[in-house]
Image (cartoon, rainbow, N blue to C red; front, side, top):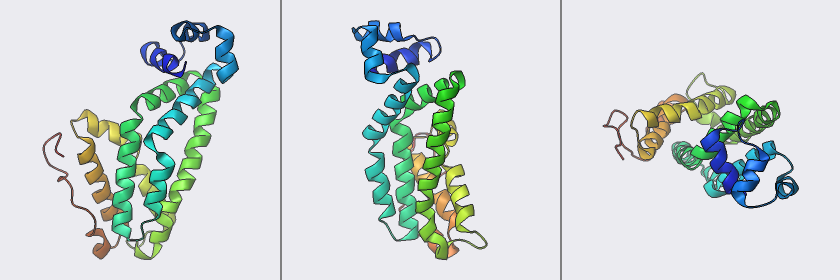
Length: 200
């Protein structure tokens, strides 16, 4: 049922897709959809949860938070975000389309994004002694969120960047923007930021 909903949302759009159409595509009765999910907007949440499970979001973030060295921690966060965006293309497209059409979805996603931002504060808070002056942990958090926006990832992918190139750029950008000069130079090597499209 979830696969049928995902396919129809992508093909027809959230607003144009009805529960009876999802039921027909899944080969089940309409009441079965309501029994399993409760509503159409709840399907969007289930699609998001399925993506987060595939992406292993919780486990991967815990690995980032377990790294103490500042440069390595930010490089690990860059790898975490590259994996999030690479695995979430369909779910995110559905989510953004549904937000435009359904105020209840928009409200739920706003809460999810606020919770995500709070969780990611844990990435930068321990870096406070190593931040570039005059950054505070709060400003570093703002920069971390801005540099890793989905829109930035999509723009670079549309311009021919590979996921590996995006990951290397993000790690380098975070280190350069957040850490003091000595710490900013540490971290894993990656494709040059001005390399050819698709470099990896």
